[in-house]
Amino acid sequence: MKSFKYTINGNPYTVHINSVDDDIAQVEVNGTPYHVQMERPAKKKLVSVKRPQSAPVTATGAPVVTRPSSSNAKGAVKSPLPGVILTVNCKEGDMVKRGQKIMVLEAMKMENNINADHDGKIVSILVAKGDSVLEGADLVIIE
Image (cartoon, rainbow, N blue to C red; front, side, top):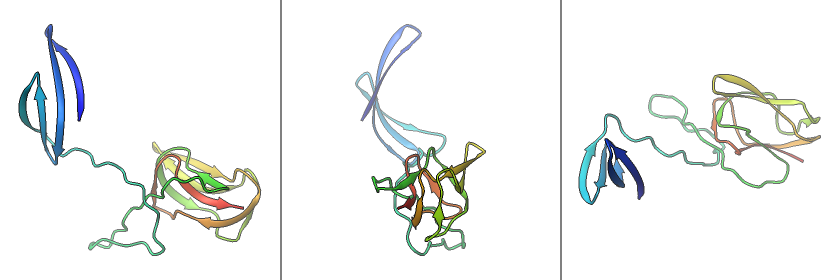
């Protein structure tokens, strides 16, 4: 439950949001309960999940977007900000040098090069082209 305090035209209001289901919010304003219908449904929370080996598709044939989970894997190159993977410029088994571009991430309509942060061998690629990723998500593992 979230609570907010507002002052409107000099009058104090305490608003408690008890629950939100689709476009109906159950709120309490200064102790009086209300059912509030919103113009559009509330945004869904982003859920972190690991990308399956074969990407599922919807009934329309569109790929299901997955988001790699954050972990503390040793040698993991992490996403610096949330975005969409545009290209993957490496494959498992490749040897990379520190600073070498390994993928491109689009965030806020800008293309961002994701570079290897140390020399080593690509052991695992955890994302694919078109995946949405959260900030801090593991992208590749370099040993």
